[in-house]
Length: 380
Image (cartoon, rainbow, N blue to C red; front, side, top):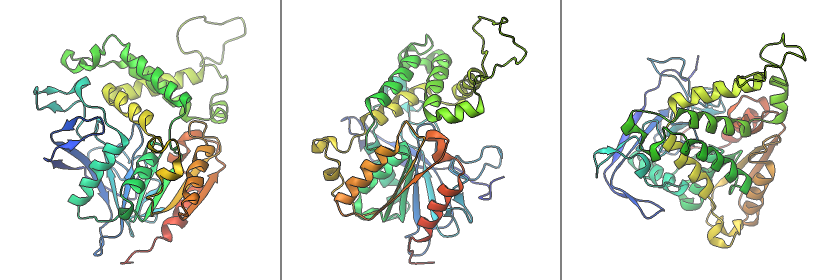
């Protein structure tokens, strides 16, 4: 059971049009968010948590009507935890385009009074940060003690430090990258094609048909999940074990059912994902991942892109993360150093692959705890 206790989602509606990077405009939007801890009198203890691809604003705690639904980073956030809610006022925000409460493809398009579906405009990391900045103003927060994120969330934290340097005291980027490699974009594209080629996709307007492109979502999740795990973890957890351990060498089934345990595990993950995640959201968010490249406007020079940054930074990578390898985190560190920014770097020797940023690891949590303990607040 979570030590954070019962939490309640909140919603804030913006009636001011939001101009997006694509040139499109959202006439209005809603953001879903949760808060943990108390904002102090000086309003300088707020910590923004930016979520990754399939996560949400539900960062810690649990719901009264669903106690098994514990926040995705509950091991990191709460009373006495590395990001201690006795000291910090923590905010988790659901990104635009998501399917967990913020305005996205499932919302009604005011122009048609039908769900946006495929007509929902492309959103980017930059757009998410602008929406988060609006929410911060609504909550009376002029500066964050820290903006924190892992993976895609780390990209948002990076954008915060660039776009609003005076509003971010500390920037914490975990298992992230300044841009996707061609290989990463390729994985995203294969996942998107799995969804788009599903007969139930209907060019993104499947809501009108009362169907969900489940098969495409299943495959997309399976592809993604493979990239989140290390080879060592898969070998240790599953190896080449068969579902039916009574098989002998001459008893091969030669069928299409899951014969190996790793196959069964991936199918289970895919089936579960297809019950709660929206296909259009998957397409949108993976595109946002692909497009993120703050150095592009500077001829690929990341140090120049980082020139506005004033925040102190913590960058964390994991040795077995081959999706966003330590080398990519080191690029971030070197670009910060070239700008004479204060930066701490930790490379954790963990076996879990990209998913390590979500898991409990004593060394990882010790780094986070020590860093946040050193953040000075006006009110203790």
